[in-house]
Amino acid sequence: MHNTNHSSDPRRPDKEHRYKLPINNMQASGEDLTPDYMNILGMIFSMCGLMMRLKWCAWVALYCSCISFANSRINDDTKQILSSFMLSISAVVMSYLQNPQPMTPPWASAIQ
Image 1: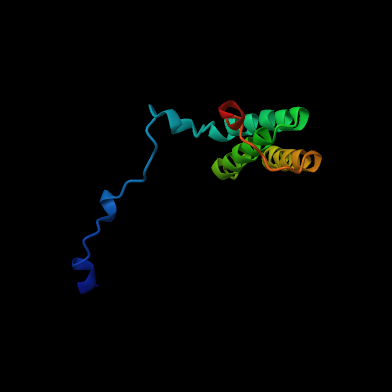
Image 2: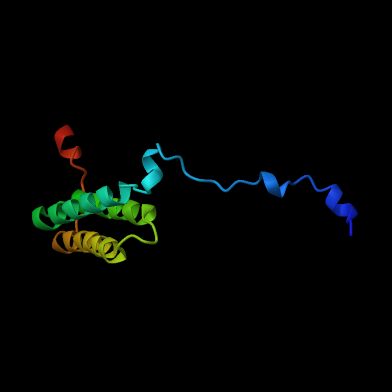
């Protein structure tokens, strides 16, 4: 049984090939280390913000945690990303509870 619609169909199933990542590509193993680096930076800045009471460190930690969360994959460790995010939020909250004055950027004191 010959279908007239099939003869006008330009697709050729015998020419279809499934896409495979090139082996020589750096990303071939699926290793994007940006979330890991941002997670570590977020934890470091959170600790600096909490220990040294630097508000800008706490804000940078929150920024790094957001980048880490945005670039994470489904199979990444969600507990570690969530704990880094909560640590950075607590650093921001604690720094403003200790000193509710608005933050002055580090370079503002050098100008005066």
